Image (cartoon, rainbow, N blue to C red; front, side):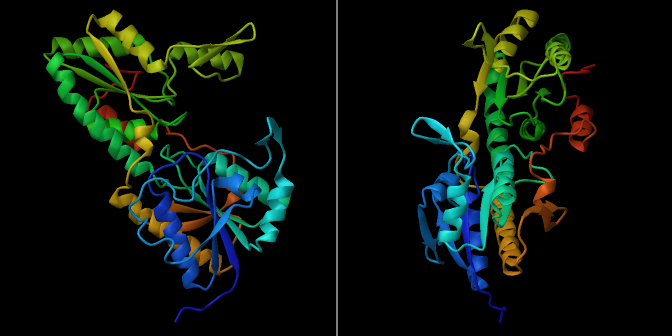
Length: 371
């Protein structure tokens, strides 16, 4: 018989949705209940904590949700220290602390990506709350963990899309550019691109040379290849843009520019790339943007297993009274990591990563050296 403990935890999901959130909620709740810990679900992320919107979670409440996509608790991108209220942005940290105490919580469990890690750590620092986080994002860019939950599911979706685009590309002898999520990290695009056999993979960590990519596509054409597929991460930049940003010591979105106080919507980077490559190669090009499709649907078996392991490990740590940590993945183990080592740090693809070497060895152009 497991040792029984007392206490109450709250659990919320923050930021964008992704496959596996419900599986993690289930894992945390069931393990916590196993140790005699009372579990309270908080609706719609940190906004639900501010507005004190909760529901009790027992075994029945989390039954049957393992395979469901999204989060039945709801999510939001609101943060207590800058909460939109009545048309204004207000610091509601004190309200969050008050409701935490009103609910008699021993710990607030936060499921989310980089923004959520920072917000949870800020609540601990400024409000004295005990927090425990789990790494959720399809971008796979949370520090101090080998993988985040939701990444495998999103990579499977993106890979399937590339697989399907192969038939259209070869039927019409086209260049097809497929835009993949990931913000400023290339994990999702790189993984899906390799798995889907993309001929060119462009990621934010490697500024691309447009002329080099065009030469690679032209060589493929001359070699009798009927089509080319280009996997593009949404945060890519050209070598010229990288130099300009370095010189200016600031980073701007490739989608928006400011001119005379007016925000001008610019051409999406994947669309611009397709247009430029069509002009340089003379080959018809098309663009497909997967968008939020990558974040929806049921989690893969790998993610279901990962989520259950992360959730149950969190339950064990909560029963031990270990707080202010993130449950990360190191090799085959789920391990506690001090949240101070995670918050505010983004994990990007190292240019010497084994996946990079693998891509080059199968003659994939990464935008820099495509010879």
